[in-house]
Length: 300
Image (cartoon, rainbow, N blue to C red; front, side):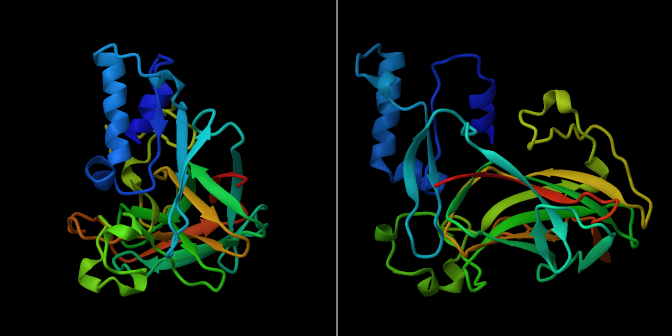
């Protein structure tokens, strides 16, 4: 997200942005094309070497395909976010669905805020091939009767047309012995090599936003300079920015929004020991509660 802030806010036309389809460490140390490209950039601007660097596309993006498929990489676009991005406002709806229209009556879904296996989920099936590219945002109306604060996590998961949870490999298949994700042993499944989906997190007492410092409408700036505790049972509105992503969906494949109280990725770094969660969280949607996902999409 820092690279995106740099692209959006650096006041120069001498800037380039590339989203790679692998984990950052591999791109820095194992991708020789990436290394040579960085050297060409430095040669141009630090050594005044005339190497035609300026003809490099200003923005290149990648789409993860998940499963055993390699990413679609180095797609040149005019700007970021891409100018043809459509921000779909998908409301949380009954029957665990995401809908283009808001339900007329109030509804709730609850989850155990201290269990990773408990979450509220909402799904959308894509009728045609499409890409999710850019910065999503989730707006939630939440309550908890057990305590005066909530740590809320959201994740966007990709599911197959049959509902199978999919993962994306963060390094090229040619660089590891397994030939499918199913072959990767449980003790080797880390966030370094596997990507679950785009994640966002917010502590309810830090929900205040300074919109003058937000770099994008879907990435609200939370100053974290004041704590606003909530009364048990009080319903509060949370705007949660989600890390930028690029994912290709085929017709029939499913996007799932999950809302929970525990880090939803492959948690191989750190613990959840500082969580303030207790009891059940309730997600309120429909009627008076415009809980929704703002989803950036483009055609593929």
